[in-house]
Image (cartoon, rainbow, N blue to C red; front, side):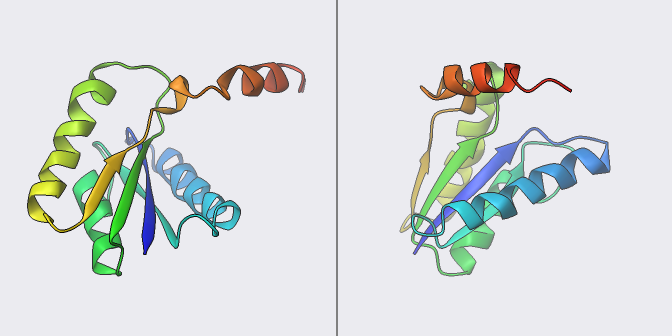
Length: 122
C-alpha cells in the first residue's frame, strides 16, 4: 500500500494548519489511483509531526511512503530538517520504503502554475 505525506512548516495559527489538512484531503481525492492514503505532517508548531505522519501511514498498512515537502524554496527546512525527520522515521521503520519527493518549488510544473495563477485576478 502506498501513502503520501504532505509536509508543511506548521503554524501557531490553527486555521493555517487546517488548510494543510484540507489540502491533503483534496489531494487524496485527486490521486487515489496512485496513493491509497494521503495525510498531512508538520515540521513544527502543529501535529502530527513528520515522523508521526509517516508512522500513522505505516500503522494503517502503508509499505511505501512518499514525503512531499509543501515548501517553495530549498532552505534549511527542505535541505536539512525534513531529511533529518525522515531519517528518524526510516530508522524506526527499517522495513518500510520511505522517500522524499522534490519540494513543491522545484517542480517543473511551477512555471505553469505561476502563469495560470497570475491570470486569476480578484
